Length: 222
Image (cartoon, rainbow, N blue to C red; front, top):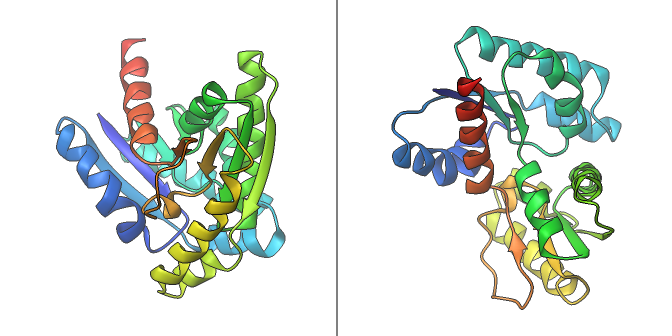
């Protein structure tokens, strides 16, 4: 089995591969893995405020490149472009998973008041949409509250992880008082350490990789 991880940041080694991909592959040596990264995808999405048709075209082309390279599934690690991921995956002949989907399912199971904490405004709304989709599938009414840790993403991209983490923790401290469960809206936030709270704090990472592995197993069984 071969997994492609599709990134929208050139810092994917630090943010995704080292903390998540490598441990996952160590536990599952039967899986090969490849990366595709294009930081212009998130830059264009941020500038426009949404994932543009040009972003959609490039993402589709990258997905088909992964298919040509022998990938059995694609894990898209950026939530800001998840509307595009959902739009184009029906045209791709292998499973395509958006990083937030497995976590959204867990959040809906965990409570009715769901908080989304984001370091980037363009990530929050797509994650909210996915949570509402999963809630509808489960026949459950949920309330979603968004909190943005302003300036955190910019700090991280500027190389100041301590400032990024401080901003995320401050926003989290506020949000946990108002909801039943918190979802971190980006994989780049998953390494932030914080106190234990009475409500669960769900992060992208191993859940998403495990879902991609299961998608490959299910596809091979068909």
